[in-house]
Image 1 (cartoon, rainbow, N blue to C red):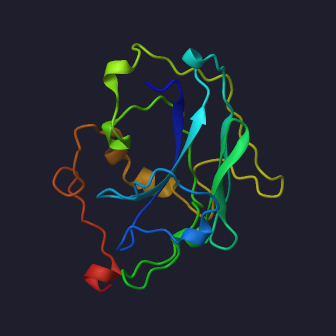
Image 2: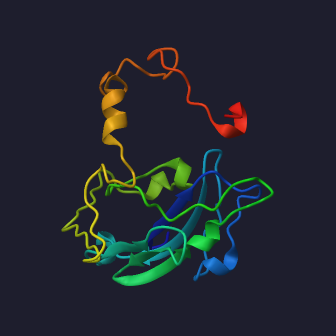
Length: 197
């Protein structure tokens, strides 16, 4: 059994192109894990060695840096304090075969999820050799922003969400509503592709 532990840096995006592919030159590092897609998303993974307790390692520094938008936009993942790989916006550009427009590096408000995730959806798991219970300890989380581009909050002018949430507040607060149409009695929003509106 290997004494190494791996971490995975993942970029998810939808809708997917016909072949679930990324434009190769826009990724600046070889991608070792070639799972590209599931039914609902496409993904690009980079798998890196990392420190962990049983190997004598201590804490690792993980991070990501990104510039949102389309032009010169990117996401760089950091492992052990060093850049691990970069995905540039042109990697998820327009695809005329599937009529999918270019997808930006996310511009809307986001939040950080820092957890220990184990799932068969990430790949095979060697349960026989894992130690349970297990713990992931986080020493600190820091968020830095360029001084000329500070964006904090969940209702910025470019991506207003508060009015929409307040209009449909019951959908966000009533756990018994599990479907938009049948339970909440709302119409399904129309779109120009299907509804010609």
